Each structure stands twice: as C-alpha cells, then as structure tokens.
Amino acid sequence: MTVLIKGARVLGGEPADLLLADGRVAEVGQRLDAAGATVVDAGGLVALPGLVDLHTHLREPGREDAETVETGSRAAALGGFTAVHAMANTDPVADTAGVVEQVWRLGRKAGLVDVVPVGAVTVGLRGERLAELGAMADSAARVRVFSDDGHCVADPALMRRALEYVKAFDGVVAQHAEEPRLTAGAQMNEGDRSARLGLAGWPAAAEEAVIARDVLLAQHVGARLHVCHVSTAGSVEILRWAKSRGVQVTAEVTPHHLLLTEACAESYDPVFKVNPPLRTDEDVLALRQGLADGTIDAVATDHAPHAVEDKESEWASARPGMLGLEQALAVVVQALVEPGLLDWAGVADRMSVRPAAIGRLSGLGDRAHGRPLAAGEPANLLLLDPAARSVVDPAALASRSRNSPYAGRELPGRVVATFLRGEATVLDGKAVR
Image 1: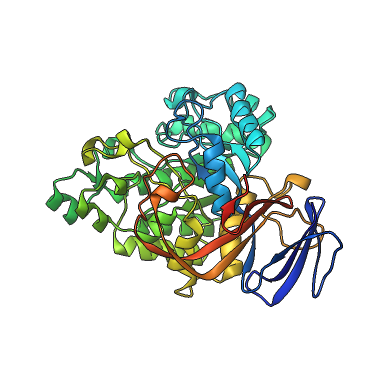
Image 2 (image 1 turned 60 degrees about the vertical axis):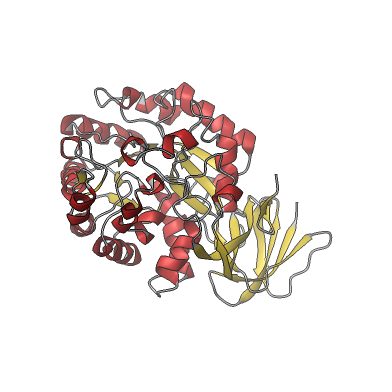
C-alpha cells in the first residue's frame, strides 16, 4: 500500500507531504506526487510518530470479559498507538515463555498494533522466587521488560537478584512501587480528605520508600530500573536525585495522574478508584513539571479495563483501575501542551521516543518504534487534529469495558489516522478493521 499524506505539520512544524511505501517513509517534502497512491488530506493536522505504551492491561488470557488483545489493540490504535506493552497479570500469569508467546501471537493475529508482552518478575506474581526471565527473553516474544505490576517486588534481596539477572540481556525491571505493609486496606490517598470521607489512606511514603530503596539497588548492581505510575511530588524528587547520580532509572506517569486529583473521591464513584490513588493538586503539578523537564521519561496509560460487576459496586469492594488508551493523548494535550509545558516534539519524545527506547523497540529494524518521521524510517505515525474537541462517551469506546474516568468530560485533540508500518489502522477517526 502506498499512501501520500498531504500537508501534515510534522511535530507541529511547517506543512509537508509524507509518502509511505513498503512499510517505510519513502520521502518527506513539498508537493510530492505518486501515481496510484491513496491520498490523505492532512491540512491542519499534526503528524507524530506512533505512540508507544509501556503499561497496558489487555486481560487476555483469563479475563476476556473485560478486554481481549484484539479489543485492546483497537482501542490503542484509535488512541494513536502503534505499540503497547501487555502487562503480566493475566490468568495464567505471563511468567513463562509459553504464556508470553501466546500473548505475542494474539497481537500478531489482531495486527492493529505491535503487542509486546511484559514478563512477570516472580512466579505467579507472588514475590517468592524469580520467574523464567531468561526463557522469556529468548522466546519469540523477545521480552525485555519485566514487572509484577499490581504487586510490588517487596523483598529487597529478590529485587536485587532480578536486577542482576536482567543485565545479561539488557532487560529492565519495572517496579510497582508500593510498600504493602503501609497500604493494607488502603482506598485512596492518605490525608485530610481520606479522614473526612472515612476511607483508609494510601500514604505517599509507601511509594517513595520503595523507589528510594530500588534506585540504590539499581545503582549498586549497575542495572536498569523503571518505575511504574509515579504519583507523588516526593517520588519526582527522588528520581531527580537518582538521575543526577547517574543511576539507570526511568519512570512513567499515567494520564489520569496528570489530570485528576483526590477530590474525585468525594463522589464515592468507584470509577475513580485506582492504584496508586489519585493524589493532591500539588502532586499533579509536580508530576507535570517532572514530565516537562524530563525527570519522568514517559506517559504510560496503565489502561485497566474491568467488567461492570467489578466496578459498579461500593467503593471498598470495587477493583482499582481506569481505561486510558483512547484518551491518553488528549489528556496530555490538555495537561501539558495547552499550558505550554510541552511542545509537539516533547509529546513525541515522552509518548513515543523514550518509551520505545526503554522497551528496547527503537533498534528493531523494520519493526522499530519511536523513530523519527524521516525518509527510510518505519512508517509508524498518527495524524492529530489539535483543534477538535469532543466529550468522552464510554459507550462509544472500543474497549470491552466502560470504566473511563473521563466520562462526560470535554477533551482537546482527535486522532484522525494511525498507520502501522504504512498500513492504516485508523482513518477518519474510525478503526479500519
């Protein structure tokens, strides 16, 4: 398929044409022409490299009632993503080469985004002994990111061994930073509001203590550490200190932690229950600044679909988690682009270039992600209408679940088209298949 995109503003710059052929960007220039090409009018649209998500829950195998690899892939494509990392807390857990290969093959079959499995750090996510890290790394899925997300690798000796082990194949351990003895029964951010609402508090120190411990372990063994869903101002400061010391640590922040605060809990609507919890206004400002100055490397959705019965219940019994794939870019536009904290090049860096580098996807040749929109590079890209605004309707989302925290909220920007290796997965804002 040959596609000629006319008049797109690459990274928000001057309008240019992009010719896509044989899975690559064949040419970028002015007044390009190509006989027989499918022409896409991109006047007024911003072209960005395809987004890469380091943190997606696709639920398959085990909870296909909430999401499947196919439905989650479709939601991702509609959000402008061309690659997503599928977390390991499935049933069975993705702690063997067999399970990660199953997820990888389901992603290939869907063909909408590249589905990159994340392997569990410990067997069954139980935090007792290491999973088959080497076998997963050597599998067809080529796992490079390992996480017990949903659970913290709380044992420091086990965490050290995991960090040492993944060095052999340039892997990274992605930690869910939560000291479990400080969060037993926790329902929301700990503070005056939690006390007034009568909901058990989740203290910021429970996150910050684990990050502090793990950056020291990573420094000691010389390994790569990635911190999932950073949520507090204190965590940003610890990461800033660690990076100043040369520690190989990267971090991500979710869209919902960039936009929403603990005030949402006032409604007692379980759609706002998430782990880590929504924090204070001060935390949100610190997270935005940390992302803007590069202390936080990436935006990752933590897309967590849940079946109706798991969310429409009393707050205490509801499962934590929110949908995130389709609205991630719009939230970043509202939280960082519109206030002037990030330009379009910065968005591309935090949502494509850096996450691809962390997941070791940027050097995969024809299947690389996070690459520049330049001649010879893989044609993974999206076209965004920055002037569009729309109200989020959970019933219209591609996910099998409906637990969007943005329901009824007007957000800026609309993904008009997404291309995976030159093939359209989204056109005119609708999934092609």
